[in-house]
Amino acid sequence: MGEGDEEASDKELDRLNKSKAKEVPVIKYKFPGIDLLTSPPNEGNEVDLEEIKENKRIILDKLKRHKIEILGINAIVGPTVTLYELEPAPDVKISKIESYANDLKMATAAHGLRIIAPIPGRSAVGIEVPNSSRETVFIKSVINTKKFVETDYELPVAFGKTIENEVFMIDLTRMPHLLIAGATGSGKSVGINTIITCLLYKCHPDDLKFVMIDPKKIELSLYRNIQNHYLAVLPGSDEPIVTDTTRAMETLESVTKEMDERYDLLKMAMVRDIKSYNEKYDTGELDDELGHRHLPYIVVVIDELADLMMTAGKQIEEPIARLAQLARAIGIHLVVATQRPSVNVITGTIKANFPARIAYQVASKVDSRTILDTGGADQLIGRGDMLFSNGGGMTRIQNAYVDTDEVERITSFIGSQKGFKKPFQLPVIEEENEGIPDPLDDIDDYFKEAAKIVVLHQQGSVSLLQRKLKIGYNRAGRIIDQLYNAGVVGPYQGSTARDVKIEDEEDLEEIFEELGV
Image (cartoon, rainbow, N blue to C red):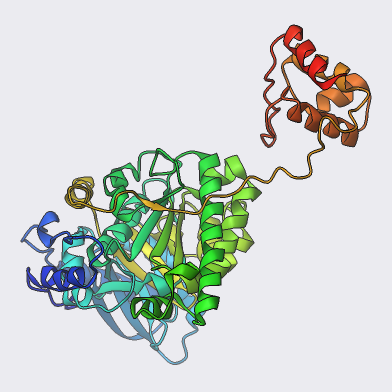
């Protein structure tokens, strides 16, 4: 069994964070302590030696019957699954072992059995068999390790534990974006909470901001307590967590604008990345009057991409793809989750720019291939069991469990401190209304008739005018634009008809008089 990581002493994280908080004099801030997290129960998950012996015997026996000779077998016990390493004889064809996956699954009576042939970097074949009693990996046992406490990563995320019982940790700045997929209830939202909790424990509010987009409306609502410390919002928005699709669209476009502004600042400062820029700014080499400012990292968290894709379609894909392609150098990183890993949600453009991917349990091999480009996620056993892929091989991890109560304790601890006066403001997007013809200039002959039709039907659509007036699409579109400028119909709303602002013909006559038609 893997040894696991060395635990840090209770005070070590607090001590390091205190020194970090002193360095940044913008606000007085105290990092959350390790005592806010639930302690794992003392009785550890004892290794069931009998079960391991029995599984070894079954695997060897089954392969022997199919004339596959195995020279040695070794077991590595993890929190959720045990990896059996087999050393096949030199003349055994590896693909032959793979083809017996279902036979072995039946023989061991396991829920999900995964064969890795061969294990990357070793001359062995791996068979992962779920343990009959699985161990919960608590977030405290991951955060309170020397590995996490002493890390020098910019945005460290400790997902959980690998099969060898080691803490699996990555730096979000190096990934640089993360795509998460898995069926309903497989642990995606807990995974997002794990990511956010790790970042809250290691990053000062001056250096990190979150943009949270949550079409489900409830998953990320816990974080509104920390809006003045850690959240970035559109100016004038009354809700710190974005739940509405149109607001999500605006927010993503605003983040794209922030990205363009940051690139201009880096270009002026003649540096290549955000770290060098902030170092230059902190030493006073850059002038505030030229627009230079301290740039915090921005992590954009989208909890259900499928819902945004259904309601906003291709429009939402464009800012996500732009950010994914360009935003890594200027400290904007995306964490995108979806429960529907189909090709019309995780499109080719999105996939190409997300080399780091996480798959929780999915329903079929097709879903697994969509997210990971290979099978395997369909054999996971749920509740935080996941595969992490970063372009190269795959790592199986048991996601650390973060309770809602723990998140509430952390956010209320941070929220009770005096933060910034308001959340971080994203840039405003200017409305572009050019190209709409002026109603006073060259009014169409059908204008009056069209206005009456629109008011009568209370529906401002181009197709309605085409049918009723027997005119072409371009002319009907031009009339609708003129009706919009005259205040008869509302703005463009995508595929739905425009709202009609006039209710009866008397009001319409007043508009005609004003326009002199």
